[in-house]
Length: 262
Length: 327
Image 1 (tube, rainbow over the protein chains, first blue to last red):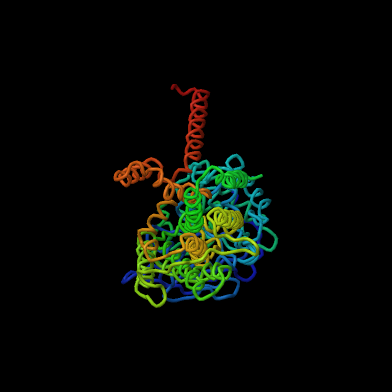
Image 2 (cartoon, helix red, strand yellow; image 1 turned 90 degrees about the vertical axis):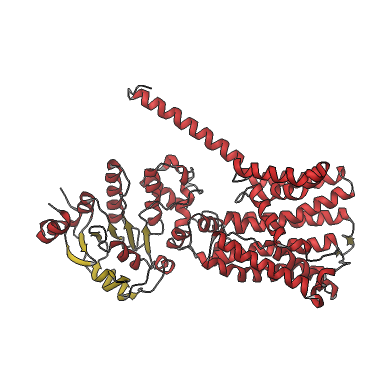
């Protein structure tokens, strides 16, 4: 198997730097001092058994919860205490574990609304055309995601798989520097898993001008993670067990015993 | 031409000629209906498009009415009173929007209901300002240079012009990116925020713009009925306005036109039922909520969805047959 991590990518200063992140719920230390870096253009996987702290880590990185300690830096700026809106404005996109499309809007409008707030001022948008000048960009993503045949349908009326594609496409509309994907393969049939992997590789290889297009992916599907990610972090009991390339992770006996069970 | 623009055009033409077929009371009633169309257009933005459950709309309607009445009594022109009513309601609307940043659904409905009660108490108890239960009477109708709007017909055409202008304004707003942002806020605020939609600002704006529409409607109402007291601005009126939005179809542009007709004109048509009126009206609403929870204007969408589902089912059956699966 050819792994994407074998691509030669410039390993310059980190896009995302997480240092000593801690979060406890009562007596339970969900995340107990996690540190890692994501480089520009890198696809970084986060794996670990249920309860290992992946979701808490993700929610801290996305401004949904405030960590107890530690820092999160994006492009050298401390963003530890910023909320989801501020993070979006700084170029962080995300998908959710469950489907989160706007059910009563058309697919095309879902994509347009996903980026319109990044164009101009709020007052200016009151007088802007309905598609905010994003029609061509939305159409390009619609074609790339092969959802042209449902583009004018309401998103809520589509099948689960089609909605999943819309959901992922929305995260890329504003050309974010960093996209956090929370279990992009959850509930998806095996044939579509391959499609999602192909799309993510395409979007990573061909980022828009100025975009750094790095991803952080939480996923339980090991084949998907091993094939897609340049580096993988294994979390167990809120701590980092290992960080390395897919080959290194596969060869790590501690990881094999604790998680992969091979 | 957009379908909604065509409908608005046809509706305007129909309303321009309608007075030819009506007596004085009919024209008055039609004006009354237009006033409620304006008020519920605003509530439709807050509730139908932005998804904020407000049961305080009649308070804004009242603030608009009292603003114009008090200012006119103080010698201020209606033409200054009308924008003042809109502006005051806009700012009070922003203030009422703040609870919506913390609570949602039924809890927000109760918070707005409390606001309505507080405003109503001010109208009833602050006699020095509002006239209390005696209200304010002899509110004049406005006049344009060389044209009196005193008569019911002239005032009707004036309110019709205001309604069409406000409908065009709202239509433009909803077609702009703001319209999509309001819908995103209603459908999924968490996702919307992750995409950069400032849900705080849009929540406050949905209340403020909706309130401004109610304020303008209230100002027109005061001048229409020429006597105001706290009665029409109670929580019951807010519930009635909410019902108008729900019956017409929340989130449908023309929902308020139909909803206000059901709330204002239908009771007149049901007068023959006399004591049975409320029973008939109540039963009609219950049946509507059971079969058409998205309102009367959802009927075309339902037919379209049913047709789509039938076609999809036929396509699947054909595909299954082609794949050799026995029916």
